[in-house]
Image: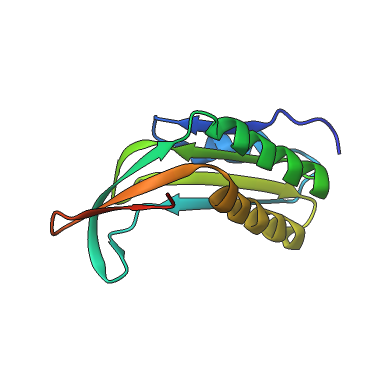
Length: 139
């Protein structure tokens, strides 16, 4: 693997999926697989009106570690940016991307990257339901 500028960031600003894809793209790779996690309007049968993401102060370090480990293990460039703050239905919460010479490996590694981010990076979400109730997820 050649050295890649690692993109692993927590952001309070709206996410740019094209910038995440660009961080991994290159002439050696015929496939770029991206995942965009989008705020949906429901969860568990309840209508969701908004989400609030909060991150541990070290969350970006955890995200960088996950990205670095996945990249080293796979030999592929990876990138991920996770949003924090108040989000509404349709906003991007997570954008992750992996580039590979062929699609199968890019899909596999991107799925691994997203699962590791979800389980290892200390970011919690508070779901605000349409009925006025809210609940924290991932605490």
